[in-house]
Length: 502
Image (cartoon, rainbow, N blue to C red):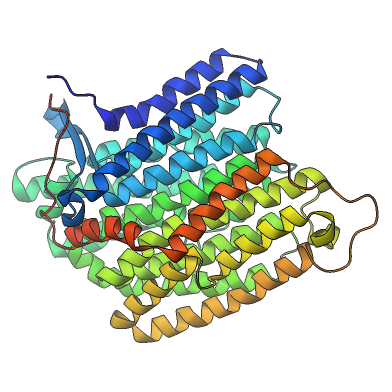
């Protein structure tokens, strides 16, 4: 009996919906309606897969779903997809943020709406494909695909320096992608020369790593490519510019989804496939992660642009994610993966709030804000809530992830864990400064800006519920994460549970 290839559907449904939106042309209501319906269907399909979370395979780290068929067999390339607990959570996060991005854009985008919503949905296709790919060639194709829609979203619908920001984004990410391609081709050649079988299969590559004397070069090439996307200091300078100039939905997808692909690639590809080099690279990653935590937190204190401040906070949070991955034990890596989800929720909310405020004030400058607690009570309540989540307040989502990362890191690198805690303490200063300058302080002259409407409150309310759920009841999420983490630490133990066979 023919079974529906659900994983392929998750990847290509957004692309099909985007083409339908493009066909709507300049008809704004038709384009955004199409995008919303497709995004809701995608969210429904992804949410339905949560039913697999209670299966025995989930706790063992086995594939919950998989698809595999020959694509270019002469080159060892397969169309291979796999869904485990980690990729399920990331695809679900992407689907949720995609719906919210369409709603955020509802009254903001009137120019070329068909093309705009095509690019939003094309981004989802690229990201979902990357999170599900189990063939390194396929992984690289989706890695590159993400760049195209983000370039046009920033360059065509961004703010005053949008062209500069979009080209800077492209130059950095293309340079990183070239290094990644060199690493992938080197790994492919080394594995083939060693085993006699040329393949891009992640499972096969992890089961038979190349000789230790060449792993270091391959790891260096891959990590440069991944570090640009995280981003790690000093390869981060494209990010504040891109966030500042991107439209609100672009910032949400960039922070909530795109940055996760770099950390996910380190977790899924670099560390498991090159274990000898990973042991040597771990202290370097720890140093770069801590540099990012401290540097970005300190620089954020001096920012007067709200979106730029939140952008630097992303570098701090992703630095903590890489710190947990570098420690490479169950607690630290589980915390790092959870923190990817947490950052996608809380920081996306802050970018939405920053975009809504810019829309009302026609400014991102903290000097033009203040006194909003009285003028915009609903906005201010959400802003304070998500700022506290970003801060790591107990009871909210970031606290759990940060605690697991630091406790796990302490087992491997005690001094680094202490330094990471100090770095987070420095981050308290920029968060409190942001809150003080935005919703407290003296009110600005002139009529008060309008408060959140029902649609905007709904968007933020959904994110607030997710933040509270993870903060108060992280167990179900961690159960989905821990199985795949254990499996990656013991290569070859993931078991395919295929629903589609060629």
